[in-house]
Image (cartoon, rainbow, N blue to C red):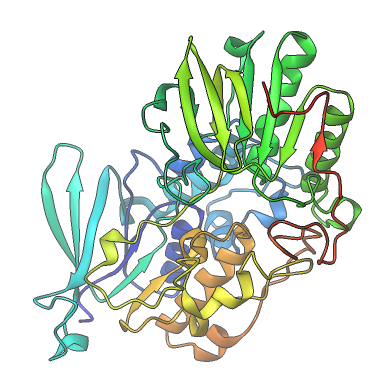
Length: 432
């Protein structure tokens, strides 16, 4: 199958990185991107500032490729998503040139002439990557190896606490957004709810708190599912200063009375009446008079396009099974996430790999550096450099963030002290 290229699905940060590593090793690579430009998903949250600094956002082989054409890496600072694209990802895509095809969606991956059930001669057949363009035209691309770096951006988790949309969530879709807001001026003087516990939710809370400071009649309510989770992150224990600053700023706006917080609130229903929503929890508590909801509850991978491949994914996280135990948010707490390379990423389907955010499935602990190490290791393996593939070159900052340590409903149990106060803000939220 040497006449066929390595096909990479997705021209995001990890897809571009693995393409750069493969190019450096002289391996023919073709990248298929559904967007009309590289890093299209990053561009959609271009207004958000990353908590990783420039040194953590640039892949090693990509740096070498760019520097060979006179590019200079930004020295310091924490870019926005848009700055990450313009300062690094777009130039990298330009350097990779015609290796990238845009405006093309991968709809399925299989073995040529073999569905998932067939054993005979399976490993000797090339992969068939099924694609569709924006006009609906279909095509097939043959590949000797497929690397899925398509991420999770297009598949958001619903607001419903059981993993399915809550009752009324679909009907209320015009009042529910699943992305971090940029301009929030239209919500001045209204009651806005943010759902979620991660950094995306904190970003939204901070943007809305700025609005509440300017327009005091604006009400911001922050709903979190966990009963005793730490609202403010790792603080001084976080080696990523910008991430620590997010938690510190969240504490300040809550202490200032600009945001109400309710923990242990698991959404069961949205009811729409009198030009407003009522959000109801499984235990019957309600938040009423809501004009808009930002449901920032994370992402999940699209595994439908892989259904004719033999994959090994963790049944809970939908992450690559070989790394699931190291990233499980029910167990993972403070400290660094161990490096994951080709050995952990191996699938039952020889020549198929999932890297990047998609390899983490629903786990929220992914960092760009982790994906770059995956890209380096997989490319080294495909280049026959097995010593380099097995070597660990990842150095991660301490996270200082506990994720799920302890019981779902109780405070404590982890290495970060979780607060015991379950209601923070100006007033109880049972009745809005």
